[in-house]
Each structure stands twice: as structure tokens, then as C-alpha cells.
Length: 252
Image (spheres, one colour):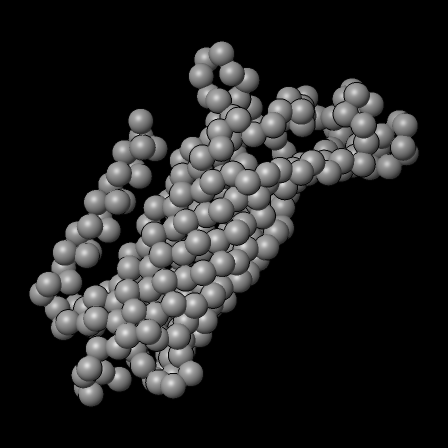
């Protein structure tokens, strides 16, 4: 219930930000473009599964509607449609914190699950600085929805031949369980820098964090995992070009 409450509060905050667009310096600007970057992901399992960050690619389309300048803050709504490679990479160690060696292959055991999603964040954006010619610092946050596409397991051992006895973590159910919940949702936010040129367009670099409020597995009393939500760190670059601009020579 707390997770859902946080999600609804964030949506309401976005609505308030949009409503303020009626009392600032009016803007009516629309820009579209593309973005791409790198995402480092893990899953918060309960019971805990030791992990390293799994690296993957993220990229897609970006849409931005700028509504006003409220005092020194440039307010906008940003929507994205991204393809993202996320999941988890297990840290399989023994009691001496050394990699567990598989008795059949003679290699250190490695396991990762890559899960592909279409992600749709809808962000309230505040920027400070130049709008059309120069640098602008920005912060943006909002809800994010995700739709499961497919998943792929990569392991260098057969699951029935894993070295279970030497592992410090005996939690292995996730290695054979497919994703159950195909719909993901959560909250995301980040900071970045934007360089704008009046002719070429807008170039951005951003660091973003996503915390999932949904779980990939069931979390009832009958299920094995009480929690299995995503945690993602994203570094991305974007390019936008203007479709519509506010006619105001005072905008810099």
C-alpha cells in the first residue's frame, strides 16, 4: 500500500506542476528527438540474492512540451518511449568470499538474467539557465511504466549441476522462475545538463535513477519471494529539435 501511495502522490505532484503553467511567463514549445545510453540494473529480492550490477543498453524517442517560465524555473512535461535491457547478475561466492567453482566445468559459476522492456516515463521537468542559446541545468522526475517483452538466461553451468553446497547464499529459486508479472511500474528521477543552439537544437546528458514499485514475481504469502522489484541507474544522452517555438524575442 505504501508503494502505491507514493506512486499516486507523484502523479498528483505532476498535475500541480502543470497547473502552475497558467500564472508564469507563457511558453508553447514542442520538441522531439532521440536518446540512448547505458543502464545498470539489479533486483531487490527478499530473501536476498547477492548481485553485481547488470549492464545493458537503453534508447528510444523523447517528446518535450515546455509550458512556462515560473520565476527562474523553466517548466516542461517530458515523455519517452524506450527499449531497455535490464535484469540481474548474481554474485556467486563461497564462505571465503571467493567465486564458487563448478565441479563439472571447473569454472567459476556465473549466472545472469537479461529482461527486455518497453519503458514509458512521464516526467515533470524544471530547468534553470538558458533556454535557446547556452547551458541549462535541469531536474526531472515522475512515474514510469514498463511492458515486458522477453527474457534470456545466461549461465555457464547446467542448473541441475550447480555447486549448491559451497554457496553462501542458498537462494536459487530465481534461477528457474520466469517473469510472472509482465507489467512494471515505479518512480524515476534525475539531473542533467542541456546545451541549446537556436538552429541545431538541444543536446542533453543526464543521470537518472529508477525504483520499481512492482515486482517481477508474485509476493503473496504463498509465493517464495516477498519482494522482487527493479533498481536501475541510467546514464543517457539525448538530442531534441524544435517543432514549435514561442514567439518571444526576449527568450534567451
